[in-house]
Length: 364
Image 1 (cartoon, rainbow, N blue to C red):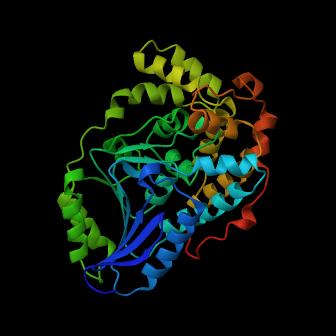
Image 2: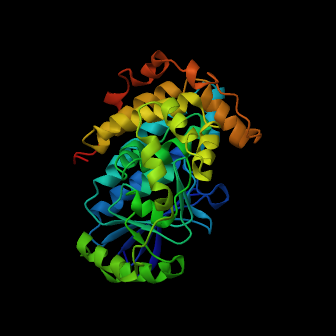
């Protein structure tokens, strides 16, 4: 790779470029808030192949095109169309995406994510498993999948289950957004750097040269980082921990209903808009993730659940209501928590798909 900015590969959806010793991967669908497609997953995997073996690349940087955010998640419209056509895009997309998530977590070279603006779902999987996770004053990070009949995937159950107290349960069930400081508190990010200084940070990373290592990158990030302060979610930590420390969604809602605070009552209202199946499935996935010992275990479990959810009604109905008809009025089936029996949830945990996930050699 030569000095200066040289485009190595450019496609409609992904830009892979060299900026001195910096290997840049730019998600490039700004009109779709850089929603992730299968082609993007494959192009990113190829870019990592290139950068990992190129001795002139010292640091790998992930960023999103445009001003709105890194990535709003997977291209759920494409998944919806595949479901309607009886296709298999879901199984192929999730398999390759989850393998990429595990690979990011095991990269040998420093990997920096600019988690600026909106970072949701699949965007979390591309960034929050990396070694150096940068959030800004504009960050809005969320795992909002229960609102479309799905569940926090891309290793989200691993991350959420390791958040302090019951913060992961709260964010996983409600899909509410985290600020940059909230993301740091929950273990999804490492440093908060003003968005206005990202260009300066970028140049500092370039100056590290091809011999850069993780320690050197941490030093640069520390120079630009704002002091850690209180996270906005801390204000509600007592309520969250007291109500969410249960293994039943109904018990969680009951505990929240007994709390007369505006926050607790608002949380109940939010939960009642979500897919009942997704809520119960997510809670069980989070509890099983808590007992897991690796990201890979969680990805395998998520993949099996995703294969089951792809053939059920709530997922396409959730997408229809959110992005197709945009009426925001999904008709969940089953429609209530009481109707979601243990047998319904057990089906998501039947052994399936584990042999399809061929992970990198390094353990995660």
